[in-house]
Image (cartoon, rainbow, N blue to C red; front, side, top):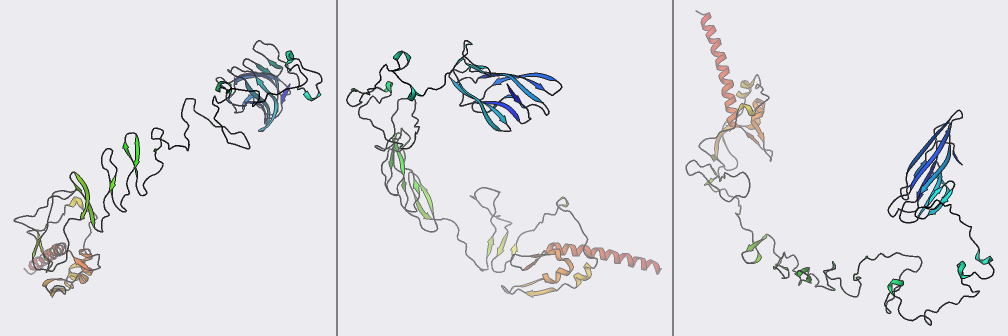
Length: 420
């Protein structure tokens, strides 16, 4: 009888290894004693390899679970070893460790075979205390003395592989010297890779025992790998075609690009393209345009009649007209100019001036002085210099002056009517 008297105690079982085909079954029966009543219960299931499986779970609080019996049947195709443990809050104490042959059933009453016969085990015998001769019928030799065969003097021939030999008289192995090591070989007739010869391509190797320093291995055929010749330092490697070794170009020089040659090896050449040089020549330069918005620029155009151009000496940009995007749907956050905009505008420094760079005589305003009246029309460049949106500033000034003119005309009209 086994009693579980705490909520941390249970009965568990585990196998020494995975089942060959089928895990053993189990059935357990018990009775719960609360002190005032008895309640019977049972569980059943299967074992799960080396994992601990609960045969009888822990009882509820204030309850003693009295285990009546447990049955575990080996339904596997090979013998299994099971260990039944008393599990006290993960501390395992062995109750029984049994090896069950195929069809055997272990229970708390003993172990039975597949026929239901109770199996009995006699304790171990100390052969050192046995006297006399054990007959061959009882598993002995029938002799009080033992003669051992000499493998060199009494055994001839080669032990076949079926009897644990090598079937070869010229094979010897060396290996571990301190403990048993396991070497797994394929379950097939195969050649063992050794250091005697190079691993072939068919075996997943290269078949090479050496190669050219600075070269690379390549497939010289579908089943052979060869080393290429020395490749040029800083050169670009390119293929030579089926069966041919890869080669490299000569090393290029700074600024060169690699160019293709139809039917021939690529070669280094100077990079082609326009060279940009600064100029202050007083001449007309045209702005080049394209209809493409992405990709490579292959064709560019200029207008024959309404060309946009600039003068490199004066910096003047010329066009038939200049149109700014100004649709109201593109704008938000409208605000009025300063109430004293016109008064501030009258203070802006303006007139005729000579430009320091280039010496051109021009008309305009001082961007700094325009900041007080209309700072939004003044743009700061990457170099910190200020520029003016003359078109926007002029139109705003015209509109504000028009409003002021209308106001003055209205006042004059009122004064005129008052004097009549």
